[in-house]
Amino acid sequence: AKARGVQFGRPRKERPENFDELKSLWVSGRLSARVAATQMGVSHQTFLSWVREILDKNDKNRVLSKKAEVFRHVILDFF
Image 1: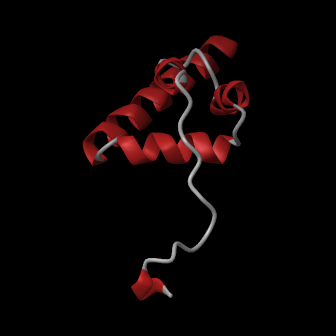
Image 2: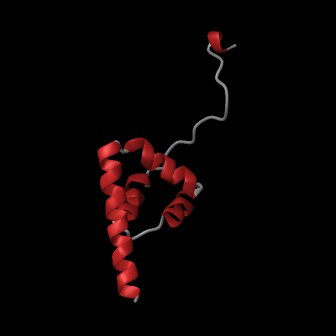
C-alpha cells in the first residue's frame, strides 16, 4: 500500500493564522504555551511541536535560554 502512495495515520492539523503572533507572545514570556494553545483550539503539546518544527537548533537554544531568563526574573521578583 505504501508503494502505491497510500497515506497512513491521522492528517496533520494546519497551523491557524494567529500562530505566529501567539508564538511571539510565548517567546517573550507574556503568554504560556497552554494559553496560546487554548486560543488556537489545540493541545499545548501540539503548539510546542509546531514551535519546534519551525526553529532550527540555534534558534531553539536562544528561545529556551530566553525562557529560562524570564522564568528566573519571575522567581526572583516573587521572593
